[in-house]
Image (cartoon, rainbow, N blue to C red; front, side):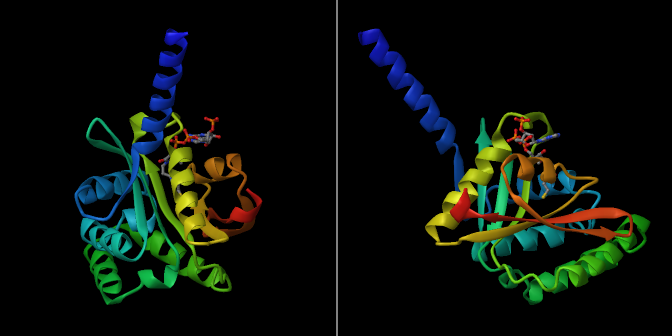
Length: 212
Ligand SMILES: CC(C)(COP(=O)(O)OP(=O)(O)OC[C@H]1O[C@@H](n2cnc3c(N)ncnc32)[C@H](O)[C@@H]1OP(=O)(O)O)[C@@H](O)C(=O)NCCC(=O)NCCS
């Protein structure tokens, strides 16, 4: 009996501690690790090709205007998710300055030029979308994938959005370099639109938190 209670309590503790290891951060303690993980996970798209300065500015702004949840394992970042309630808040003067700086300093790269054209086409293709809350980025370290961390990070984001009375949010993902679509489809996101960005299939998914 006592053993049974002990097993039950330690299981509860393990479940709790698993959930609790995903935390929201508001300071820049893990900024360098987030930027490194982003560069590694998104090296084939524009945001991963414009350098560290842009990304540092980008995530600092998200820490202020949006939110970042992280999964820490043994003191190291193993994954993060970033989101915002109103995506218009991302685009300030610093954003454009560092994006311009990043593009200018990497302009010799044919991959960046291609990504730039894709980005412009993407902006035009989705300009009618009025949903403001957005899952901006999610990435899990290579060696930590497939363990449910991505799912837990999405859960944390959705709990936050629910507390803020957000009912619908969006997420964009490409179908070639990213595994985002597999994750979102597994979790039951609704596929809204696919656009061809000069050979790169690119999708918009939405999630209605009322129908989860
Ligand atoms: C997408 C990503 C965040 C998933 O993180 P993760 O911790 O591995 O995800 P989970 O372990 O919670 O997987 C949940 C489900 O997603 C799907 N999935 C995740 N990675 C997959 C892969 N490489 N291939 C196929 N399906 C995959 C599976 O359906 C999986 O469920 P299952 O394990 O029961 O089959 C991670 O692969 C990653 O960081 N990729 C690089 C960055 C990226 O693509 N981000 C999304 C762009 S918007």
